[in-house]
Image 1 (cartoon, helix red, strand yellow):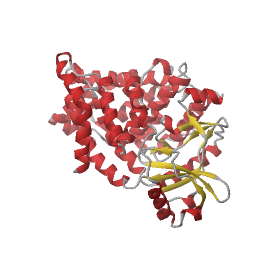
Image 2: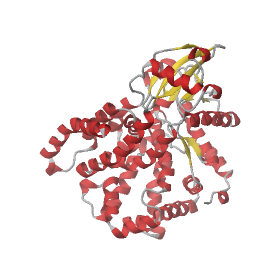
Image 3: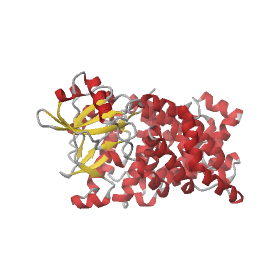
Length: 464
């Protein structure tokens, strides 16, 4: 109850001026997302914890939210209050079962990173190795559980009151976000992921990319000790320029690693926002924070492989992509756009293909999503100022016939949504890096590499 009151107070404080402006301009429709971004970001910043973590997604996804909105949320990428050192020491000692001085020769009292759910301290082992020690914030588990219960109605209220793309898109992402942040509550998951992906990196000779080495004997549920990386965020152009390395091949290497692991194993780093991509002082790109790893179910894995095959020129792939979409969502999708059969396949292709095959500088996932939303909104008779995903879902759920169809196929927020949530998020992150460093080439520019990956996939094995 106390947290709910705090959320209501903070949101009311920051949104009161916005509400007044909306009343003055009601004849002209809802306020645009750029005007909602600042009070929403201020609310997230003041509330901290889970809200800051969610703000990272917005900050790193201009493809969905637009550049202005994403820039507004940049403060969420790596900020949060420090945890008092005595609490950090107690957390570490309880997890490792030993006094701090017995494990570390030195342990800096000031954190080098203060993210939303954890803090990171630099330390030195008795053998001289410099390490980063990640420690979950005390009480974060309860805070996250409470925040998740309160976020849904908050976003639904914003959708109803504003009808804006920003509010609708955040509501759309919440279901997948629940799954994502749940994995981060146990740092043993991240330790295992680090070890696994380091093996893959060595096996496939990705020399330009670095993954921290975890020290499993010095880690636990609430503490992760790992190799320390010294570098700067990949999107800090001023500091990148000072180091004198060309970031272009480094970003391309990370993208190759993403496609490699996703196509071959259906697994990938699930949170490659700019705060987790570092240009190291030795010229490599360091990928940190492996607390979220996307793991695709066989159906979604098959969908992703089919999508890449289609973009590479396999005409039958678009039929497979459309079939996966309609199998998952049921007839509601086809009915929403008024298309079926080959016409629906052509529509799906017209929306998805350009985002994968045109240069980064010429495409936008936001434009892709808005096109889909416009088609669905037109079919459902939704007013122009309410053409957002949130409004569409709200209307679909209010119609008994469509709701029945959705329930038969697993619901509008289905396993497909949760499986593709992290996929879509990473592609939006890569879109941002692509615009910054490789705007003249498409995301699938390395066709020979992608085709080689696809050739090694046994599609028959990717069945439910």
